[in-house]
Length: 244
Image (tube, rainbow, N blue to C red):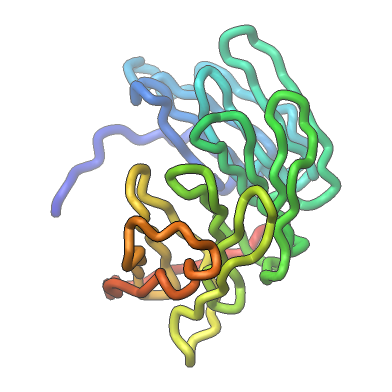
């Protein structure tokens, strides 16, 4: 695999925490440690952002983009939802340092990861707390979370080297799987396949692909046995950094 650098945007004075495209790949969103979200027009020949959102009072740690909405988390303990169509801002105070946000596939709710070893599920329309997922370790790093492709389960890495799975409706922890018995390093990044029961995780220098043995298995008590480590992929390095 090879590639080349197409464009470069340098209008930053501090570390960038997260970036994402819109669905059409015409707009770039970036979140920075200085508390700003910058919006860039890919088609423009100008390299300055077309808009800067500076509502956060601390580092903006993650971004999630939905239909006409941009969701952000910040270390000022707030989730912000920007309605792009109407130019409105909705802000919710969560009361925890927030590191990661993930919008459900039906876009009705969102997950936020915290530095207090809790993942919290909120109703996007009214900000109501729906579930809290616990019994995992997240006090230092940004640990990503994910919905299953059918929004029935929640997944997260952990700072003790495990992959965690919960039932979304009951918040019951279904399994906590060690990647390697002799490696307790943080599993900080993961992503679920959009259509199939497959999951990617990374721990230090190894990427893991997980899949279900039986695609038709729906018994909750058997989910723990149904996940196996399909194939580890060695990569040169993986660096996991905390928040300043």
